[in-house]
Image (cartoon, rainbow, N blue to C red; front, side):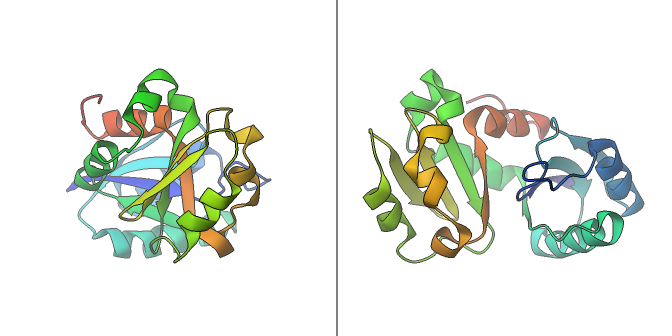
Length: 180
């Protein structure tokens, strides 16, 4: 058994809701150990021996059966999460303004041409980099003011879910990673 970080796309936004206490109960009913949530933001940490891909399918099916929600889940191990943290191409920005750095964890990789398209949309110092299956964004004026954030859809980027750097580090702490 090892920790697994489960990220749900679009959870508790846009009317897609499942109470965190019920998410934890669902995880326990699935046989997952020590389920914990981080706020009401679509983050679940469990202990499981299942491979990430198998757990993604299992948790997506359980979300649909339990809540009637068809949501994408991205599962990462602590080792993968540590690499995600270490690879951040915007470490100075993350240290100074962690809410303005976003890591978008992609389900099946970054679509070809996504980074270039985002760079063409970028305004006011916004930046984007792809490292492995993660898109990293720097939004100096915040996500709410970002042209990229408003226009970059799954059709353009691929299926993924973003977390600001505060959340990335808190999830890392929940699986025993020391703060970066």
